[in-house]
Length: 208
DNA sequence: TCGCAGATAAGCT
DNA sequence: GCTTATCTGCGAT
Image (cartoon, rainbow, N blue to C red; front, side):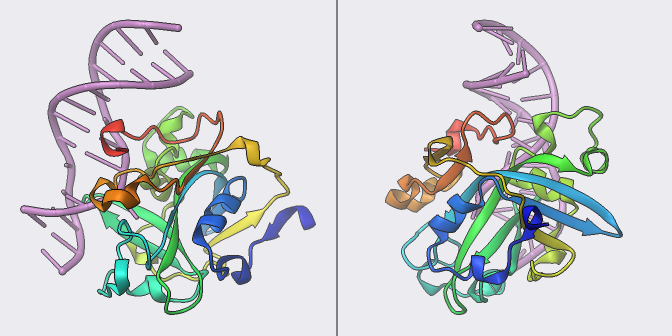
């Protein structure tokens, strides 16, 4: 039982989104809609911070309808659309009023693989199933309508299944697609599980 | 199977 | 228009 510990809000209200992003590697991420459970182990994340991070949508207290939910207390889903096509899932962190978040970029599928294949339109189990932030949301059936969802609820949640990831197994590097952020784009705030085939293969053109 | 490169993608503001 | 990506095919392994 203690092997399937659901992560509670205090995990996400901690002040350092970079630490949380690293801690999430090896944790599990699930969704359940209409009784269909889908998800897997997190192998890639990125940290964003509202205060000192030009790559963040809510940099320097920018407050728009889109970024509003980032200012909520940790433990809330921030889902937004990128390139008009892909929904990306972030988990809001830190205290209310501080716009920090962690982006879930890739997972290793463990539950509901057939359903995820169906949603992705794939017949084989391959990295294209969940290796990429827009792919994870599609496989788990998450869309922008889930923006603001509480991850302590029973639709979207995280679990600690007792997987211990040694520090040496975690790779830190620059984030993807944030070249516009200048020097902040170089911050090693992207974390991934070393050697996992489920880590996204981002186009180097966007990794800077 | 994996990595690269170029082409392509569409809803929100 | 803009955008914190994905798809597809190709060649190397």
